[in-house]
Length: 436
Image 1 (cartoon, rainbow, N blue to C red):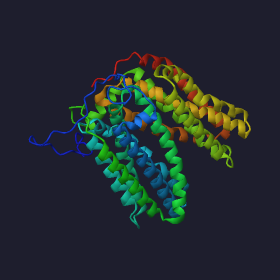
Image 2 (cartoon, rainbow, N blue to C red):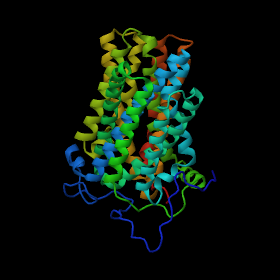
Image 3 (tube, helix red, strand yellow):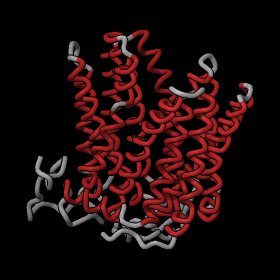
Image 4 (cartoon, one colour):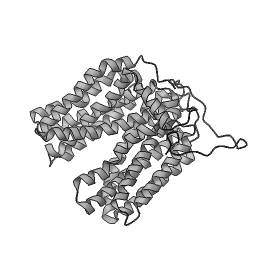
């Protein structure tokens, strides 16, 4: 594909055609916070107020369907690969391998997230996801073809994430962005848990191909909702998206120490703590589920508290403490605590994941509107990639020391990254945004 060709090219609009319906243009800076309907000139409200916004409700419903479909299809593919190969490695790759394709999307064509027609882009990308999941439902498809589809889907889903987040920044005012992200985070975690539970039930009565068909139906439903509720927004780049534009914006994103520090704080401490969680099966094989559940519960509580109850000013003040809270409780594992104390520590640490919300808010504030989709897509892809890196690093350390020691070491590294990068994160608050 030529470097300047977008992933989903849109046909030119003839001069005599009816004008594209667009939402009111907004400036790149923080929007005003007045009113209650969460329109472009409105202020923050509760989750119900967010869902009264028709476009946000449609974007949210489409996102929920996408998470559910991704969870079901990953479980179906993992089950199929496990039965055919009996390989734990290939099974793990089949369930989480798409994460690596998100990095490729961030490095190559993420600029399509800020194209002139974001609604058209997200609809086209969801249509491609629908075709890919439907292809997985074809009986007799070779595993090599299934893995290829997995990577292709991961690539396009990363572009879809960037486009969705860019639209979110335009649909809701800046003061409502954190509650919106909090609601989506809560829904993502809850939907994933329910998806695995429902998927396990479905696999008792359906073949993996049947579960793929259910995932395709969910994707189609999400596509229909997004297509029928979103309007076209046009505050985007006039330059053609492609490889060159993606690299240019990424270079500008990483050009300043403050912005780099924000991304480091969003990626590395999270990823290292996910590495701690990846060792639960080795640390306590019979009780790993208890520890994982405690971490999930803490994460949901933290997102709900920080995103819903704290003001923007208080969120910013709490960001550093939350980042420390994310890793510090894992230092207790050096003492080999009993299960209940370990679970309590993991629960408290899970709440620290909510530090992502104020850091994302700060990054969004430093990013002009025309490149918000790409920047948020890069942030999301990098965070997912570092989760894999953290798990691999923790697993590598655990090859040579006891699991409890490995957890302690990785947690200490997370604390060290948070502390050493703090001056740069503080400096980033006074940094101008990227040049459009």
